[in-house]
Length: 124
Image (cartoon, rainbow, N blue to C red; front, side, top):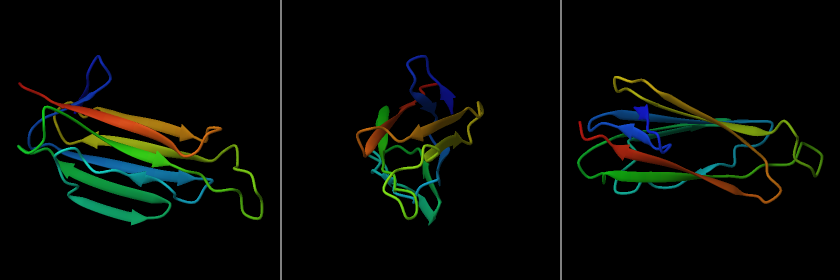
């Protein structure tokens, strides 16, 4: 997996991609959507962390994506979200480049918030 200039992640046919989502300072309230034209190979959800994997196959289009919706819970015994509440999303692939995409998602005034992760299947 490598980073394209447009921000998409380039993956190769046969490459296995791992998506790790970890909550800190909030209950795990992330919801991952389906892959466009592909299937999640495995999903392991043990809060506060979820690990998903997929292998890029011939059913994937040249460009594909998935989205994750993030919501946040109030602090225990309170009605406000902790300022330190966040999710860490880490995307890795087993291809030769070994690029790692890591994003920190913090609470916004309008919840839930959604992030889209876009991929492009390399042609060479």
